[in-house]
Length: 110
Image (cartoon, rainbow, N blue to C red; front, side):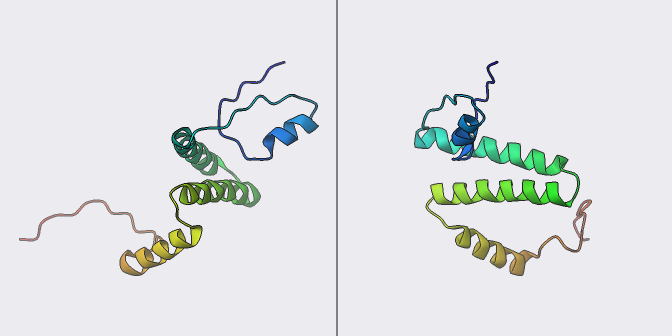
């Protein structure tokens, strides 16, 4: 039986498929295609994280999101350390999300 995926996969997936006695059919993406597929993968992994239940599943899905973010950073000639440093600066300037603030609206002062 044939399984159609048509998506970006981790580097070792073709080897894993072969070990399962199947034949992977792959191709190498151009940089432009890779960029598009990375952002699709980010959406996919974020949706899986949102749906995850239980500590272990949440951790695994968060790790998948993190791996895609690392790949996007590398593609854009940045390091994950650059992303972390920018996150730190934004947290210092604008805060994080730990206070669980939900903004309903803002109004002009009289």
